[in-house]
Length: 58
Image (cartoon, rainbow, N blue to C red; front, top):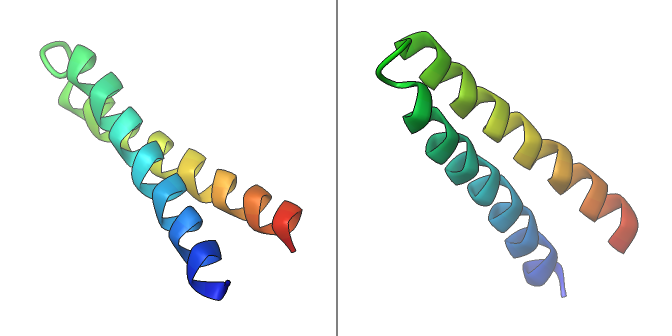
């Protein structure tokens, strides 16, 4: 069971990172720093979702 909990966290972090990457591509031509910011926000959202999911499942 511990492997499934770890995998769900990895999916949450990876999914948040990909969402941030996708949103960042819209801002890439206007500002490269906005692109990096979107990636950081997506990563933060994924880490936050991982924390919430691990709290709910335990």
